[in-house]
Image 1 (cartoon, rainbow, N blue to C red):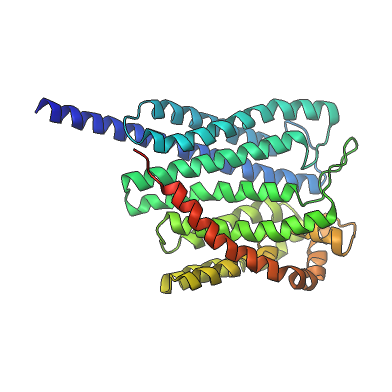
Image 2 (spheres, rainbow, N blue to C red):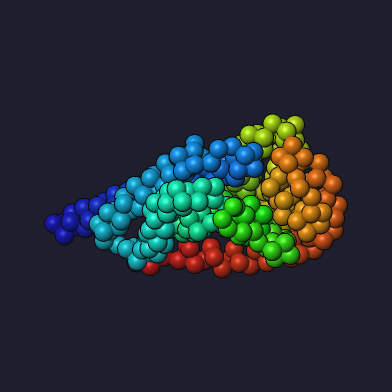
Length: 361
């Protein structure tokens, strides 16, 4: 009888430690979500030539997010030490998160020193690359932690909506990496870091479609094909992107209605997969999601393709007009590789989800 009670107590203690670990993972993901929002806002401020210092509002928002993620990492570490079972399963999440936190924590002082010595910094500056790498590692760590908990504990259905919070920072951080390698926003008075136009064209054409499809299909698999998850994820991405990249630029506000139409492909994919979950259907929707990347990443993606196709000097007030001036040429040149990359994401997401959901006692 005593052994039975002891076992029950140990199981309860382990369950409590797992719940606290979940809270830590949620804080990590939430923090990175705030960081990515601040980063997108910061890019818009650069385009609008607003004063850029280490203490600007976007930077404050970003490092507030870093603080939340740091707290989440500490909570995760302390709770992980108390685990009696599934310790190995949760360690992968913790390890990835700690690598990310180390990078994020070093990015702040690095960024301060950089601004103090060189003033305006570009998108590809060393501090920003450190920050973006840290964001991505933390986002992946948080996503893995949340997914592992839901898998191990077989939580109630409504808990699966935490996966939107888990996957969204990964999508946004991944977008940050691709944008850094493709957008011409890295030349300053001291350094010329802009990517070569053809290289940037290829990175955007292959990277963005893969990321859109990968993120959407990953959340679908992690949630066991739950209806509405892709729509929720896509809708949140569009809301964040429009709030930080479109609305702050008064010249683009009228295009909000156009941008909102991007929700249609995500809802359509949800409906298609609700009716048919076959491999052929998955490949089809993967290609569909990849094909709309030029619209989903409006307006910034225009700058990448402008470098190769038009070479115009584009002011913030002309973004809308140049974007539509190029749209036919961009779609003709990118539609096939974009569809292929979207289809490729079907198979990558399958392997990734199996690895994430693997449980080690």
